[in-house]
Image (tube, rainbow, N blue to C red; front, side, top):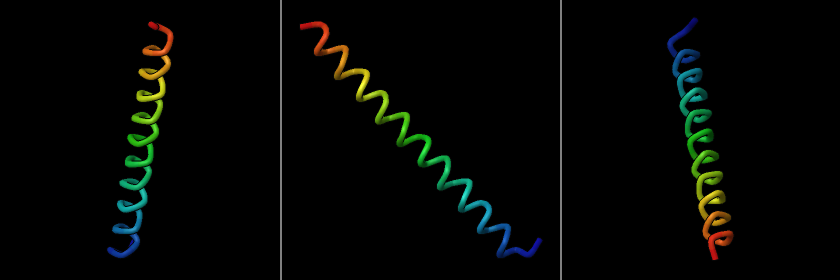
Length: 40
């Protein structure tokens, strides 16, 4: 594996991790807003 391929793979892994974190944040905010609406 060339160094360039290794960098690309790491960038892809980091991008996937960031997408996962963002997705979890969205789900968290969604759940909080639903809970707040249900509490009223």
